[in-house]
Amino acid sequence: KAGVTQTPRYLIKTRGQQVTLSCSPISGHRSVSWYQQTPGQGLQFLFEYFSETQRNKGNFPGRFSGRQFSNSRSEMNVSTLELGDSALYLCASSPGTVYTGELFFGEGSRLTVL
Amino acid sequence: GDSVTQMEGPVTLSEEAFLTINCTYTATGYPSLFWYVQYPGEGLQLLLKATKADDKGSNKGFEATYRKETTSFHLEKGSVQVSDSAVYFCALSDRRNSGAGSYQLTFGKGTKLSVIP
Image 1: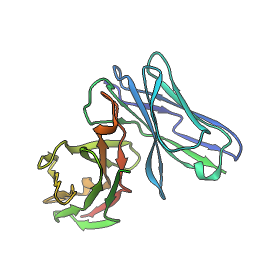
Image 2: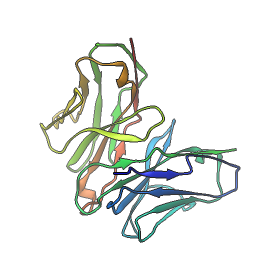
Image 3: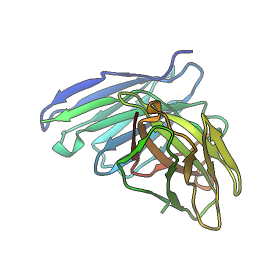
């Protein structure tokens, strides 16, 4: 069974630009969550999507947005990039219909903002 | 709000040494507790979990017991190996704030473990 796939793995942007990150969940998983990982703040929850609807949202500004497609693939977008947005962005999937307590993480997309 | 506090790293141990990584939590509901591990260059993966008080989670020689009275979930292993070198994250999810199948994890800052031969 293929795991969670995130693309691109690495990218460099400059301040003010925008970026789109992609996540393909494990086959059959309908929930996709996004987390931001930084050395200072650790892992912070961004949002969760289920059946193309945002089900939960963390405490991030509106520059951070996401969406989910009918095949459960998800994208997140960060607009007007700031230096502080440099981070590892992790996507995680789960079945989404029953509580299992386990998230399956991808390897992440490492964003560097210059 | 919910929070997780785990011991600061890095932790360096010799092979076959005993490992303890402390984790305490604050939650107003009835959380499930987890330890996730992140090996270099990889995403996080679940190491073990416990869903109610006094439950013991175990996997790959690692153990942690859900202690409600001390709000703790310390990770232990009797004899570490070089291959255990990784970053370990304690986390909780509070089902009280979640709908069916929906939950978000609150993570500790992570503890980097290095095991030397």
